[in-house]
Length: 421
Image (cartoon, rainbow, N blue to C red):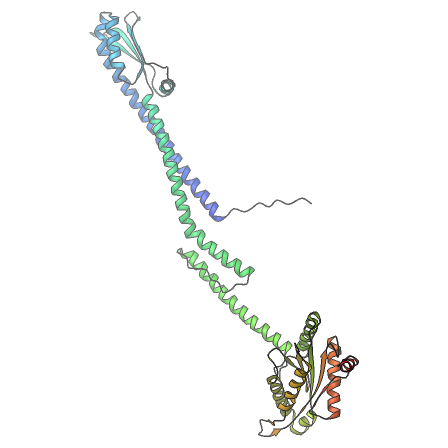
């Protein structure tokens, strides 16, 4: 399957910059062309008027030479005037229509040829003026202008247009940057905050103030929306954390529940098996708890469970875990375990802590005890279920032997371990 080509959308900055630059260049170009055309037209009128004045001046100068049909004098007078004026070709004819004198500017250079083409395109050619003597025509003058002034004006106009275009382009770029700072900048900030809120759920970010009132109002409205979203997210997060805690903890004692404990036990067993470590599982059950409920009521029984949970938790290490499995049953996970004696010592501390009376809200006090069963990994079980069963069996063995004591599991693996010892 061929790759689908996706056209990249232009940015707002590039669109505004191009449009602004195009409008500026178009305006400068039209203004420059219009001024140049008007200037050329005005210069054309001025040049034609100037040629007529030159023709009259030549007419007065060569009048005597034409009357006397003096070609040499006519050429000298014609060259004296034509060479200093914008004249390309000047001819003097006598009354017989014979060429008496002529002056012609050299057209050997490219510039001279260009000037001549400009003159032919824009100037009135040729200018014919009769030579009069005593109100009688004795000859005539034909004059062709030179386009030097027109060409220079057109070139200077073109240079002015180019210079104005460059300056306008620079000005448009500067203004587009200002425009970017005033309009596109706040919009980009708004887009950045919106992307962060959508992709990263960063509802704590805010759009900075903008100088333009409409954009500033838009940013304020968006910030208000973010305030609501942040508040909603915090509330939802708090609710989720509360629900997660309720789902994994016992509501009465605040201890982790059976599901949480079994998940932690599974991970600890996998980790211990991977790193060849040991751990211990303590199964705790309150002695005569049914009698407490029957004699003192369920409220007193709940108080006893809360006190038992607090006392057991106070005897554990920082990384150990105690959970309420249900009813009056508790479990303790000791991981990692350096020696069996550590588990036995902790079990003994828990049992001793229960010898102190538990005060009830009604002012009465109760003395209760715990029976503890201890199972070791990997000796008493290589999976969580076997460890729980072994610890549970050891706890019942402790109850049968003497309540308020601890008992280690008696499995084939542990028996074999003891025999080896």
